[in-house]
Image (cartoon, rainbow, N blue to C red; front, side, top):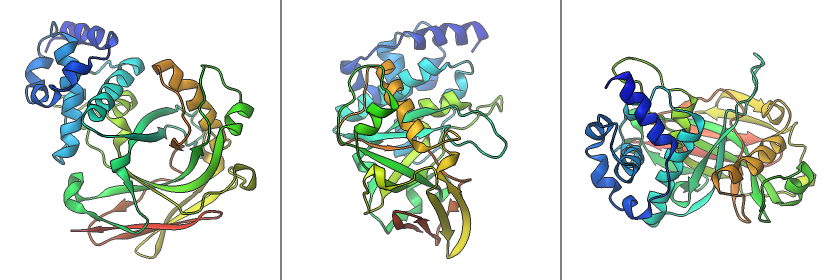
Length: 307
């Protein structure tokens, strides 16, 4: 594909609109995605669901995809358009969104500024404490294990501008969470690694969530001081604390997403679960491994990987 075609395709993605009828054809369209990507004049009614459908199928078929490497200049708005088109396709197929996950929120000792982003969580990705995973359902047979702070919303947050006080008032409870990460978007022939916007389009590599049984009132937990330690096969593998999220507290991440979702025609709703970003550099869970995360306030949760 010529650079001019890349540019035209990028403009097409910048004008994405919801096409519910076309969503039902996404599976068929995704089979011809590479051919469609060569056609800069392809209408969104075909192109949009095809890109989103390819990302969905890469997960269901447990494989990687280079589809987003064909969009080297993808912007943030276009990335969310692709992600949310995939959500529309999955909801049309009977899936139910139960919340949101965040990425780009952890500030490390290197001191880089946070670059927060969001992706969706489906009910089918909600797992029980102690779940045994099947390696056959993940790329390369392994996943990354994140520890996160979770908020359970008690009120809708309608509108487009919310103060920290209003967001705090909308929280019903806080909990600990494990998020599973399975990276499916990889570099194409040019070898250029996918960027953050490509990760957003691919739903931030979300692959599962486990919540602690403990659900505590917000005012009883010092979220900035909350700690999490992950043990893999009984050995400490990583640890972190809540003050690494946004460099302050996970509450600031929640305020960010409450004000970012309306820009995409969405909002936080009562019952939503929001996880606000990993607290450490994630260890790998492979066949035969078990992982347990211990939170200072929420207790322990675990997961293991079978064949």
